Length: 373
Image 1 (cartoon, rainbow, N blue to C red):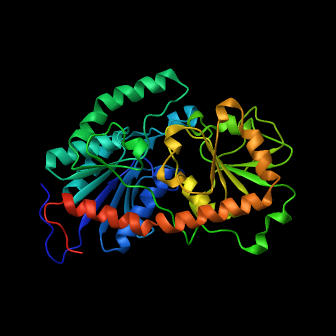
Image 2: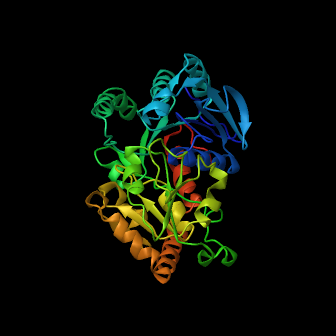
Image 3: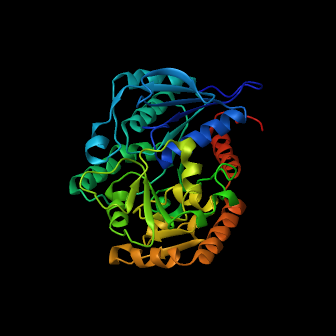
């Protein structure tokens, strides 16, 4: 059982996530922002995650003690499903860190790492917070959809039922979650900012439309790739050119590291987001970077982030994306106006500092002896 936080001792929080940076993804970016921010605020932070390309072991990563456990990620490589199968050492690694923590932060419920963390928290009576980053994913595979339903109805239900608090990134994800409170993502408006005048879009042969994400149905890759046009170029950040995709109007930037993303946004004129079932963090990053954002007409994308100016919703399933991109490509004044409005909206409402304030309040509410401010 967790002991009350002693006066003068730094509070200890454990974050458990199936993947963290340098694995690319919105959840990974959020984990990095939260853990580094909490460490800077005086928390003693530990992260447990899959080894990924970094390799197994315990090391300091950007000031945060990170425990990486060997895992097989073949499902992502073959089917685009980021579900690592962990080595049995996950059991001992998580148990050891849960025993030391005052509070545990479990990132989503669909993963083995989440189930193990919740189980140890119940056994050791350590309070934990569940953070849901995405709702039900309407994957093109019926088998993937079935597995999701089974997991959400069994292990996922167990994780949620015993949590001291349940967080959701927006109202759409919070739907159907008992006790859920919305904790929206934030964005670093210093890192992500409009390109300087020296990088003027006028110097480019044609406007650049940017897509950021994995090349899977959930992200709408096929819809965006099919929207290639002669009046603009579409650049894809997230992987190499897939087999069979030969259109020369599509440019592939590969898997871009998180620290390189501000430059990627600076090299674009329009952002397109075609996801279903989620409102990815890339929306905020693009808006902070001064880009107009074209969004798929999907309920999950109607979030507080997109309720402000700087965005346009398009019925991409009906084939309306090419026309919307041609219109923006031909109107640099509209792109400038929408981008500036989106940037101002994000600066006002979505900083990581405000996000961390709320998160610390949640931790204090659930820990046995709330640490003083």
